[in-house]
Image (cartoon, rainbow, N blue to C red; front, side, top):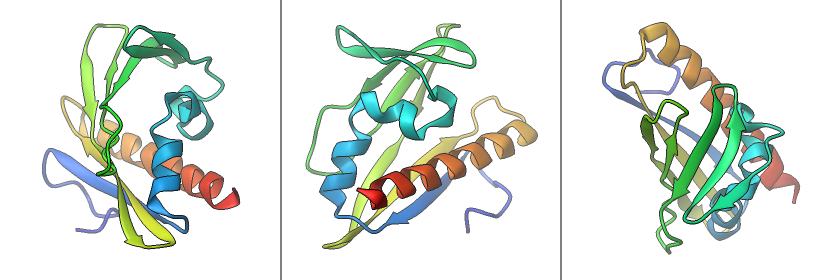
Length: 139
């Protein structure tokens, strides 16, 4: 299924190819302090370290974000705890394509979202991935 097709199941895989080595992209993506630069829902937010999590502002209010430990597999899964206390796991991978390019894959989970909300969220993730691509390919 292409990422432009209507979602059929509980999740949708969205991706972008970035013309930079996977390790370089991984280091950027896995640093929570960079999230406000490429994730529009956190744009302009001040990122603060809170013991084992990071806190930042979002349109929904203050959120907590915790990442999996650094790894050699390109896994950048992170859990976002919303102001309501609900936690959402966001699977994210940086995959090697060639020595000089990689693919970033974000798995968007439907959860309790309506189809319209899911489509809106998917569009936002696509835009965030394009922003990430632009940032990474500039440097």
